[in-house]
Length: 191
Image 1 (cartoon, rainbow, N blue to C red):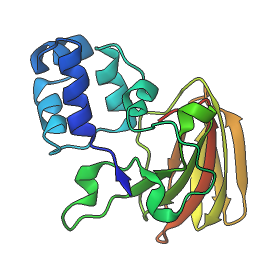
Image 2 (image 1 turned 180 degrees about the vertical axis):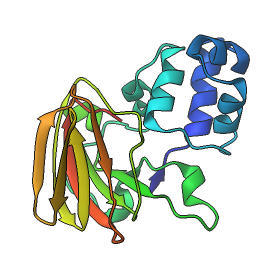
Image 3 (image 1 turned 45 degrees about the vertical axis):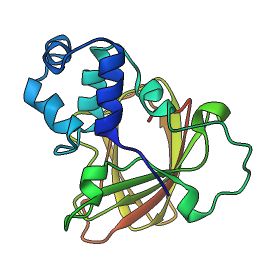
Image 4 (image 1 turned 90 degrees about the vertical axis):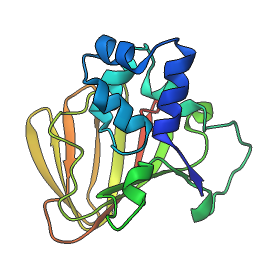
């Protein structure tokens, strides 16, 4: 399995941009301690927080994660060959990540991001609504997901599917006491 070290990558791109942690914090309007904690993998940023920090470089999420997505000619991917986009902090220790995201192949090369997603009970993409220039869709394989798109709340159960313009504010939550599994696609890639 290919692991992605968010802290190490953030430190690399910050140094390439010629910025200190304090300078990046100032440009991103986030506390210096937040950047320091992320770089040491003592804190796991939400997607919204990481986007805010990367705006200070400036860099997109796609560019940030692109380094691990080397062009591949593979057609079939086994479970241990999926790229794990889950924060390394949440995979360590005794606490399991509430959300697991595993990507199939090279999303950039194919202009399509296919994800195998797992949501633990109570998992939430965050109170800050996601918005990005893409379209996304998916199918709930098991469990139940609460999807909010542009202010409308939907409850999706096993077998239900979704498809929407990702520029609309959206959020995913598992408010049930059972784990949920989703297979999703996004074009162009977002993470």
